[in-house]
Amino acid sequence: MSGTTTAAAGLRRRAAGAGANRWVVLVVLCVSLLLVAVDATVLHVAVPAVTEDLRPGAIELLWIVDTYPLVCASLLILFGTLGDRVGRRRVLLLGYALFGVASALAAFAPSAQVLILARGLLGVGGAMIMPATLSILRQVFPDRRERALAIGIWSAVAAVGAAVGPLLGGFLLEHFWWGSVFLVNIPLMLVSLPVGRLLLPESRGTAKGPWDVIGALMAAAGLFAVVLAVKRLGGGELGVFTVVPLVVGAVLLVLFVRRQRRRTYPLVDLRMFGRPAFSTSVGCIVLAMLALVGLELIAAQYLQLVLGLSPLETGLRLLPLTFAAMAAGLAGAKLLRRFGPRRMVCGGFCLTAVAVLTLTAMGQSDNAGLLLCGFVLLGFGLETTLFAAYESMLSEAPPEQAGGAAAIGETSYQLGAGIGIALLGSVMNAAYAPGLSSVPGVPASASASAGHSLGEAYEVAAQLGGPVGVALRRAARDCFVHGLHVTLLVSAGLLLLGAVMALRLPRTMQCEMPAAEVELPAPREVAESRVSV
Image 1 (cartoon, rainbow, N blue to C red):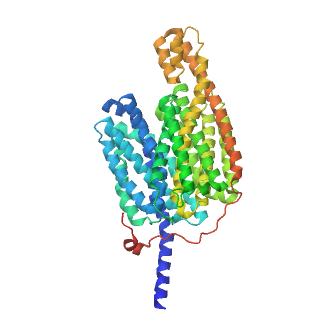
Image 2: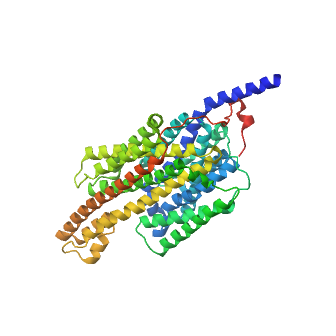
């Protein structure tokens, strides 16, 4: 009898600890996400300083920028499923440590090659951190209503990180050298590693059988090749070094899917895609990111090259988009309970389409009110869509597959971003370039160069000078605004396609409690229950 009483008291202590600690766990996970999100964009403003100091070649500079997202996207499934097997907390803490070491290496890199290596290690660390944060969140918040609020906060932090990166990088570069954009990671890691080891619960899936190492490597290589090809397409490069990686990557991913279907203990349970809510959520994430990244890229060019705003002014003009996204993330849980996944995702896509169509009124003169309205609607609509899609995807996945599901969601996020840049960039170029082929007095070679981008057209116009240069500059601006309108219309069509796709999602939010919940360590039992890394 006394043993039963003692056991019951222990369960009560653990339950009390879980109630007190899960929001602290959310804070730790959000700090992790903030770090990865900031690092994805903080280097962009430091590229000129890196170029001046390390003197990288054109290809080396490209790899300095692209290595991090390439490596991170390709390894998400590998580390997400590994966390399900060996422990998500363990993988997350190892990612913290690697991220800190790689940040120090990048900050003091003596050459471009060392910086590329460091960026690759940062990508490995990011791939260990990102799916682990979502899968631990899935376990820590078994009640769907609380989990929706936690995911809303998580997504708001992601929006903050994406916006803070360039601003933080610009501030650091004004006062320190370019390596400081990496050094800022180290204090956060020095705090996150011991705090995470103390407070984060360990959890893992219940999958049996050996971990499919060959399958994990096939998925990593296939994703790396596909993402590389998509990025090259986004840069307008269509050649053997684009087609071959695309074909090889697609073949590897097809073979990976066939392998998973044949295995008794698959790395990723593809039966999850048989659930309409899961597969639809993944598709909605891809479409939402496709629209967001492509539009942000084109909007930044419009603000700087057409309206003549400085980089800082451009960042400030885009801030309303970030604030609206934060508001949507924080309000997402309440909206999801009221409207349900179907109406929320569908409404988010429709609201974003309205924002995009509103922005078609942009011209060659500055209209701050129009841009503010369009960016606020865009940020709120897209974040509403992403929040509800992520929440539905995680809730549909079995708890033991949380790491794999989170990795699939993050991979969809990265692929959508890459495809968005490639697709919308191609549409933009197709609508922009033809109008520059018949500018009076401009040689054919100059017209071809000007057709690559608006920035290059300005350079060619400056070289030509005189009335011909002025005519080319004016024509390039007109063509860019025309291409922007065409791109916005295509984007609106894709968003409406997403709204139709969202009709497959459940009408209401099911909030049943799962039979088993993860046990968080009570404060007095942390030292005894902690699993060492």
